Length: 80
Image (tube, rainbow, N blue to C red; front, side):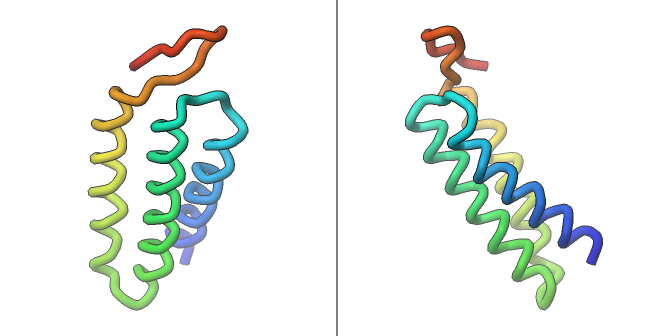
């Protein structure tokens, strides 16, 4: 139950942070879609523990694809 709470909290934060911080449009779309998938997988993990692996896979994929999206810093787009 504790892990589910953390996944829900982090997924919700990811969804909120897409709109709070200045980011490029592809970065917002990627962050929001990852947040929705994490939230859905964390709810599904209650009944199917195997769904936890989906959260890990999407986290790794998201981290590797974030380098192409960039962030807006001081009016300029920067990439990681």
